[in-house]
Image (cartoon, rainbow, N blue to C red; front, side, top):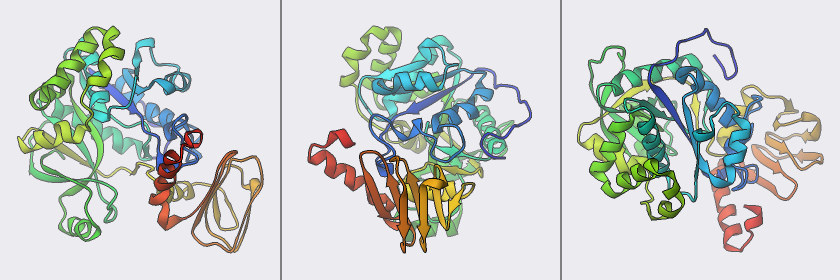
Length: 373
């Protein structure tokens, strides 16, 4: 089942809320993704919906619309424009980036005050998932485990020895009604080198860490209070008095949820994983985007095209081309190349160097060209 395909109606999960962290500049997708217009606001795959809208489409049926989006102040209006069904208080605008834990934690604290028994699930705004039924089954299992008091992550079945993702090492099986796949998490492992990743794949019992976490809001915040007391207290204080957000936000600890909660809680035996095999991609660079777009796109003589194929001429070439600059783009004699043309910037990169696009953004920042980042 693919994005946008109709599924049989399913009941929402009682007491389940979705949190969508919508942040990051997507620097490896420059110049399509910028600080002022990050990747989650774009339809990068040709699905007819932006990545943010696709995330909403996946989660709204499971939550009956109980969704909170946390984003930067500069993007709040765009988020509201793309998701008109969100309530006024369902878009939380961060004054500045503080990494994933403050963002998710603040949403959890707000939801905790609205619904003290709520189970929340955090799902990034910029991921692509094309097997919707399997995704929803995994979420339902995760919620069942979360109701037992554990913090739960959804682990993705590795399809290759990736060095771009962290890994989850599974432990013993758990006996939880409604969650036959659930297992303890033995540990979270940082992004490995290629040899180590191949070993994980050969050994089995390792899952990609996609950053999807499900827990009771109160359990998540109580765990944060255990490991980072001041951050938990600060987030709960802001939720109790939203007028404190601007004054207090910059003083909160900047930390990712993996380091703040997932890793120490796993070491204490408090984290479970629900393994899942649905199609997932975090659209981390143009190499992954090229594979996603090629799966269902139009092409121009061997080149995969984002946009109108009439804007691209290809002669003895292969790769990915986005013609967004209002002019024709011609590619001749280049293999496995990425060409991204926008009104103010042109990128040409070998697809196997896609991860290095971030270095361009770093150089632009260093030279004071913030207008292009």
